[in-house]
Amino acid sequence: ADLSTNIAGVPLPNVFFNASGVWCQHEHELQALLESQSGSLITKSATFEPREGNPSPRYLPIPNGSINSMGLPNEGYEYYLNYARKFDYSHTKPLFISLSGLSLADNVKMVEAFVAADLPCMLEINFSCPNVPGKPQLGYDIEAMDNALATLAPLVKKPFGIKLPPYFDIAHFDQVAGVCQKYDNLAFLTCVNSVGNGLAIDFETETALIKPKDGFGGLGGAMILNTALANVNAFHRRLPGKQVIGVGGVTSGKEAFLHILAGASAVQIGTQLKEEGPALFERLNKELSDIMMAKGYNSIEDFRGKVKTL
Ligand SMILES: O=C(O)c1[nH]c(=O)[nH]c(=O)c1Cl
Image 1 (cartoon, helix red, strand yellow):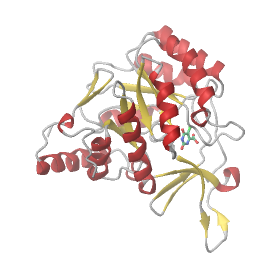
Image 2: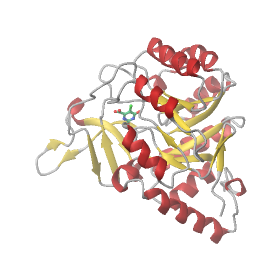
Image 3: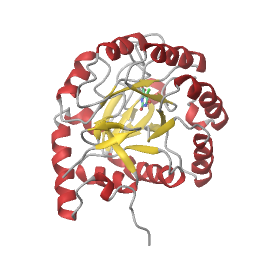
Image 4: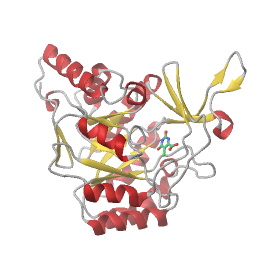
């Protein structure tokens, strides 16, 4: 079956790529994604200055998923800007760049640098990092998010996307969609980031599993699939002129199929990629293709967004 798709008119040979943060902080990791069967690749969320991030242990697999409080470790935006300058855009797969400034001023400076470089890469601005102590995430402050978009959208000029946290209230889906609708070049929403500030505790040692923030960290993996599907579908229904990239709980072709049925135009993988490595993408392509063939679908558009209701 044909797993190709596009985001804001940019073609992807297949729907799958990494979730920002996983297998993408350093060039050798990005190279492994480039050589994998992924349909694209995205860099680790960049801050203006390089960051060590939070003390380890800061990521762990747990039953039905993972917990992380990485704390935005990254090489600083100039590292990823240089990577984007050197990137061979004749590749079949496009490059996405994630930016996660610690302030609007930092996001402005980073966006201006990327716009000045005038490169074909696509920006995904991260409004939803839950793990920087003392920095509440933009995605849960609707007014601050609107203000940030009012500043950033005109600067970016070309199509771009934002990475959103999960929402759990219909009124919040309505409010966030209302804000996003105002920005024509806001072309896609990536839903969802980790379910923020969960707590994993070891029964034997009676101790939190990860070190940062008293053990509080973002939850990912299978346990967040149904929250992710709801967010993908909520924004797919509310924003017909925009696209949604689905992420959360995809461990096989089956969950990818469900994300696309919910409305996703592409599918990112976080926890499962961290655990399985880039060979995962060959497996996912085969599994999704087999599912589509079994169901009589030839392309993504044959079933995207067509989840039925009772
Ligand atoms: O702690 C992190 O680096 C992190 N961890 C996440 O689960 N989502 C994010 O957006 C980020 Cl930026």
